[in-house]
Length: 69
Image 1 (cartoon, one colour):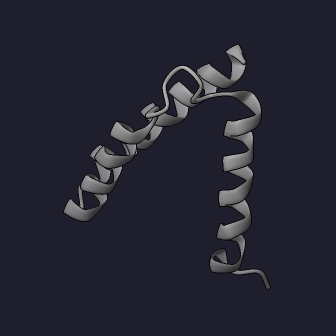
Image 2: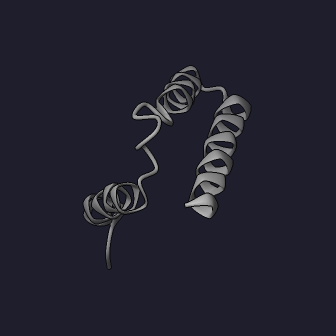
């Protein structure tokens, strides 16, 4: 059985490769940093609703960029 800890490094590298291949950060090298900061802050605070909103917002922005690439 594959655990998340075993899968996470491969997922991380695949996401890095995707960003590089599509040039998602070409125009904005800091894309996603504010959203990730908001997500981490919400998780640390135990604020489930804010964490969900932050994750949803980041995913929607990234999807929009992927569709435009």
